Image (cartoon, rainbow, N blue to C red):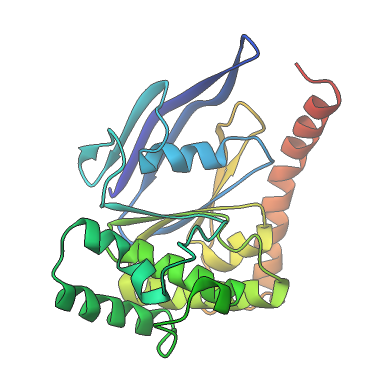
Length: 259
């Protein structure tokens, strides 16, 4: 297994109270699989991702990536956020090469690798463009290329297309699948969109309202590219929505009557 999560729990302290964000979360993700985490706001989706990334400490449980227990951030895991998080003073190429500079990779090797990644994400010709000169979709392509620069075993994506317009979002979903098919990275992807999850994932992990646990894992056994209007696609989408409905109701009830 590329990712093994066993008995994961996370407790936050808030206003002198303890908030259980995750409880007894177990998930195994084989190498090369595309898995989406889906659930109501506050269910702990992003917390799972951050713990796997090594950016958040777990309260209980064990997280193993490629046979090594996670004890902090590392180059074996690449993270892509909803906010593009690019350095505005650096070009697309220089943003991609940032991690390679930290690793002290020679300039010639950095150029070769960044050129290959720019080609992979469809940005050849924009090497010297700065973030302010790029569209939202192009910025996210740079962010994906930067995450891939260290050749991580796992790509962790936290609603990476959430801030994009609908047309660009659909395009980026297709582009991500193309990149995934070429690299075969293991992807753990957080989203609020059922449609996006069904379009992208091999499996969809439906989470409960807080405390976040796995309610159901739904396989998406549809060939790619997937047709969003097909009977099979709509059927799986309906199945996911049915699982989520009660969890959204629980989350809304908590907002109305907070603990």
